[in-house]
Image (spheres, one colour):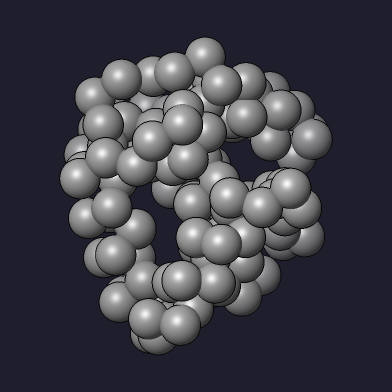
Length: 115
């Protein structure tokens, strides 16, 4: 999965509750810089997330899926509030990924311990 698609996924989560907070914006901006994306890429990700075509892209590779779930959790936590829409998006993404038993708990625990 390329970094622009990953950023689009994170933008969808950030906008899921209807707003973009300072904490979410900082996290998204940091990821964008870390991944070498441009301002135009960032703008394109925002526009995509706000469009009717917005939908998560599930990466094909297991490690990319784990990284996506970790980043989705970080975005969910960035504003200090877990909205129901965010929880539903996360749950649907995890369900589609068909993770082995216990893997989701390990992912959640690893993000909680690292952050």
